[in-house]
Amino acid sequence: MAGLRLGPLLRYADGSCATVWVETSGPCTAEVRCADGSRGTARTFRIAGHHYALVPVGGLTPGTATEYEVFLDGASVWPPADSRFPPSVIATPTDDDGMRVAFGSCRWAAPPAGGKDSVGPDALDTLSARVAADPERARPDVLLLLGDQVYADEVSDATRHWLAGRRDLDRPPGDQIADYEEYTRLYYESWLDPEVRWLLSTVPSCMIFDDHDVIDDWNTSAAWLADMRATDWWQERLLSGLMSYWVYQQLGNLSPDELTADPLYAAVRETPDGTDALRAFAARADSDPASVRWSYRRDFGRTRLLMVDSRAARVLDEDRRTMLDPGEAAWLREQILEGRGDSDSDSDSNSNSAYDHLLIGTSLPWLLPHLVHDVEAWNAAMCGGERGERWARRGEWIRRGADLEHWAAFPSSFDALGDLIAEAGTGPGAPATVSVLSGDVHHAYVAEPSWAGRAPDARVAQLTCSPVHNSVPLSIRLGFRFGWSAPARALGRRIARHGRCAPPSVSWRRTGGPWFGNQIMTLTLRGRSARLRLEQARANRDGTNALRTITDRELA
Image 1 (cartoon, rainbow, N blue to C red):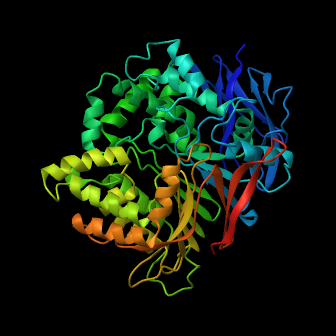
Image 2 (cartoon, rainbow, N blue to C red; image 1 turned 180 degrees about the vertical axis):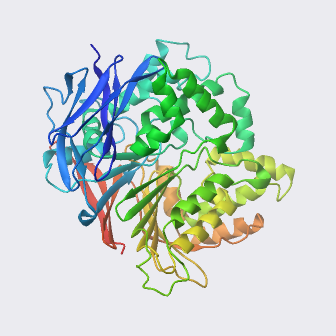
């Protein structure tokens, strides 16, 4: 009889339907039964010896929260009989309820209960404990995980010991992840954490990868990629990373209608073993990144979320380097402007609005501390040959060593995103807010842009929150504090002049932070109002952990 290995994860949820993801120990029929009578079933599919199902649940009632159970071949497997958590629920908020969007990135798996946590309390664990202690209290309506859900290149001691039991760690890639089976170990370690497992079973989630989901500096440059492809281990690592991402993260990002129309999803379900079909898809994504789209859109009532792939969709050739390939950039523009109405209309500014709030999720921040931005723009110019071949070689070495590959390192893409945001936030149909949600940089801050000669009608903000659970070295704290200072800004301008860098099309100022610690941000969106709260996980004297509010402010 099949058992439940991982999950359930409540992934997609709207006013009438949801999807629930599970991994099982063998082939079976997975079923979700809700207390209100709604239900769904799905037969498992097989990838590399593992069995999965994504169960669509229909017939839900808007504005309700219904408890659910999971059955495998008719046997109850969730909730566990000895569960200390409240029942998992599927909630279907209405537009009138507003939205609570929690987000963050960069989570090392927390140590097992009783183990020493060298980086402090896990913000997701702490959020889960708070929600479980008071299920009737306002909880997130959706959780956005903005990259580095697993660390393929920085494994725990327990995983390192497990790896040593299956292969020689003196051979590349050493104590990093090598194949699909090892990726499954990372997800077990992270998502079997009892608090996180329960939280993901009862709060819908949207996810996108960042570099550590594959490897640090993933797709930093064409030269970096050529060096990686010259190794004898990179191809298996990359394909396994993309395959596991599709199974564990990407599938749940899609709506039931999108899943029905997905030829890959149909292929892996229609064959006894979908491994070859998925591997061929991952190989195509590697050889022709423009042929695959990892970005996606979700509409939550009057809130539109666009989760943007800022890793695999890059164009790396130095003479045409961009964060998004042309097709991806066109898709982003189309999704942002769809439904905006006639921009030349003289009607009321809200009457043509397709949404009240636009959320752009990108793992890498768009707006950085000014010194960091200028250094990345300078480095891009050096690598592009602005100061000759010698500086180009130096620039590549610096780029890899200092991780200079955010939006600022792709100047044309930085400006294009700024222009698109300004267009989206201006004129009839403009939303109340445009928020760029990011992580990656192991601290949190708020920055607000401005454009010369025009002022968008929407309130625009870069909201950065990281890490959920990771280390924050002193060098990062000092560097980012200094990076926002006036002396740093003057230094950055000098560096940019050396690179003959054109001024960015947008200016910005920090309006909050930097804040350091394991933390999570929440946007509460109601009508055309928006409120931001940042909370950090702190240890209490009695040994428990709690989320403490660091800032709570109106955005609109």
